[in-house]
Length: 130
Image (cartoon, rainbow, N blue to C red; front, side):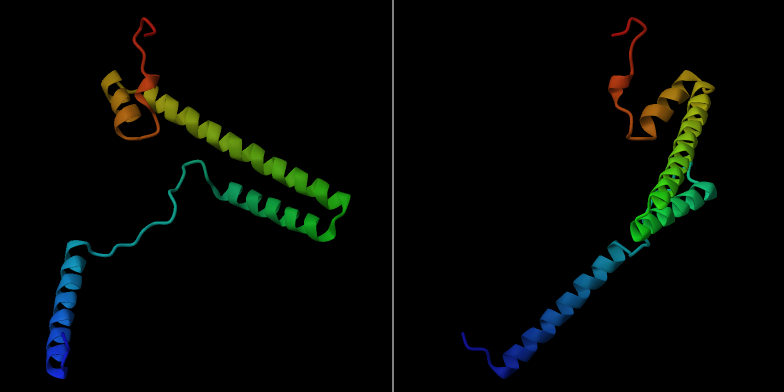
């Protein structure tokens, strides 16, 4: 089949209208929204942020100057950051466990199973340990 100028223009217009309508219906059915990049964690704070910045700065200086003194400073900064990091995670976990333990049993099950996908049903046991 040979396309003539008139038929081509007519088909192009129909194709463009169909494409426009499908794009419009897609936009109406699924509106664009802002996607957040990261989930915020409860244990992260300004002190951890500054300690991480200091540790990274010490690492870059150690690579740049390559002296033993700089590497020791890097190790000390990284150790301080890791210690505070773990302490924050531990404290947050203790707070969570205290909140869960203080709720009734039905609410406790809902908190553990219903709200998050992190726990599996294998964690539940009968009093007879089965």
